[in-house]
Image (tube, rainbow, N blue to C red):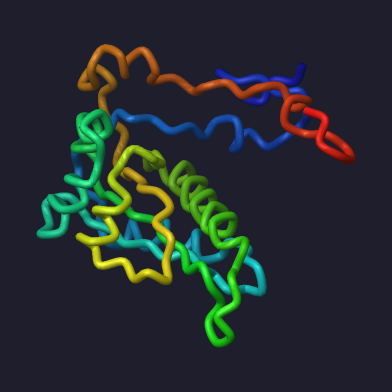
Amino acid sequence: MLKGSAKRVTTQPVDALFLDRWSSRAMSGEALSEAELMTLFEAARWAPSCGNFQPWRFLYARRDTDFWPAFLDLLSPKNRSWAQRAGALVLVISRSHFDGDGRPCVTHSFDAGAAWQNLALQAWLGNVVAHGMAGFDAERARRVLRVPAAYAVEAMIALGKRGDPALLDESLQKREVPSDRRPLAQSVCEGPFSL
């Protein structure tokens, strides 16, 4: 076993960035500046994509702005309980068909995921919490934020400055540690599926 992080152990040599990054829920409630957000979106912009199509789009609301209540209201009650202290909320969407000929872009979600990963890594490097969420009302997000039919609603992200885990409810405080991953052999196989 190789040790790459104080909290996580790996079996293969990888950069500590991949081991150290994790998705905290404890945020301070401090707003993120426009410049801080644009740095994260700039990192996302450089993600790879099929044919350089770049299907991802990010809609966002900074806390204490007119847009904040609408974004916060999209979250499930459990996510809202901690994400209310985020500095910004982001909706990730992706264009499902290529411009021009209208062919389906079968990798649009995959490519949007690559952009999210770039954003998450840049956030970690900048000491910003980035927590992706599936617990939100995607259909309501489409209506409220006027997402065109040509785009898939993918996920939401809570971004913020690190906060005190004691402000989380007790069940979430217990989860406020980096999580482990299943063994590599359970995710990877050579040749046909045999997992």
